[in-house]
Length: 254
Image (cartoon, rainbow, N blue to C red; front, side, top):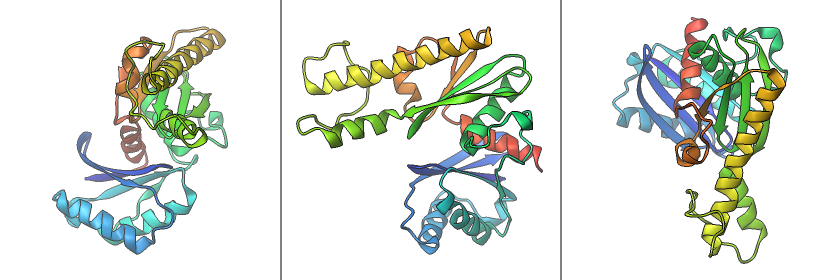
């Protein structure tokens, strides 16, 4: 089986695949202050609780946008399973045109686009990832990376609002009953949730105008299902999209 690890700014997600079949996943908070030994205890406990024994895992892959965490997680995977994980870089096989990959493109976005092109090879595809940052990245039907737009994520935006204002409360993000709220919570939901829905719709439309064709749009990330009813242009929602991209890259480099 394969362990796929996605190290993000907020969470580290570790998923287990048996071939193409998703088995289970675990999520821990990204904390650069934790030592490698502390993370080993956490990872070991999660895998054992999930019934995963070292001999069951034959390969592993890591995507990381937190450089300070990459080495620690890599060492712990070696320690847990006695295998050398593949660390995703722009030099690994992805199924994309290599010289079209921007130098600063994150490996999570690279994984998103690799899997997007794999599932829709005859269409231009956009992946909208509702994570710590909201990213909208696109690939054309030839496998060329078109680029990426980045905005603060939904939770990041709410936290910034909450931290910078004296009278506005922290709120649960869900779709509001109306655009104009009658209290602070509904007002923030209207501004953030519906505002971001409009932002995503606008960037999809602008990208389509620039490339001259319709995009197949896939949404992923923690709040993708919550906000999706407000964004009719989303063609598919897949919370495992990034992890499936890592599984694909692992297969291409095996």
